[in-house]
Image (tube, rainbow, N blue to C red; front, side):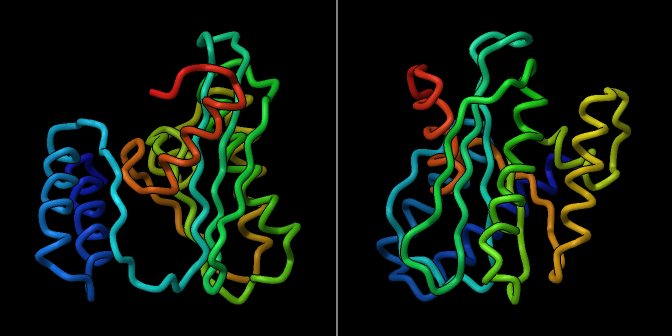
Length: 195
């Protein structure tokens, strides 16, 4: 899948999220988000009316002070249909590179969902702004790093053990409210300025 296709998928998702909203109020915000995706700028999120959630979404991000060799952290936001409040996770990790931390965020999100053990009748979507992690997990590109390959395999095994299918989705950094929250969670716990 191309970067252009990923951008188009994100734009389509934003448009679908505004269905049922007052188009006069939401069109300016939607057009600004589409412009940011097209130009690669960070999206500034604003409140919009969203359609009801019909599947579980796990939004993951990671941060590291110095890559490689870090201190690193992860941030995860889990949305469950019918729940008004999202589950948020922020923690410091022992990861040595940003890619390891991105993988760890995805693994932690899935493991947390497994431990909840009461929402398994919904399909699951894992979102990350790490194209590398998502494409390697999906098998679209080769993983030559042994540590990443081990974590990738653990993630695949965990996903295969779930009773519902897991969809792996790359989205640009901070392109949804939850990805932005995951980004802020990992930066806050790491003690670095939000950026």
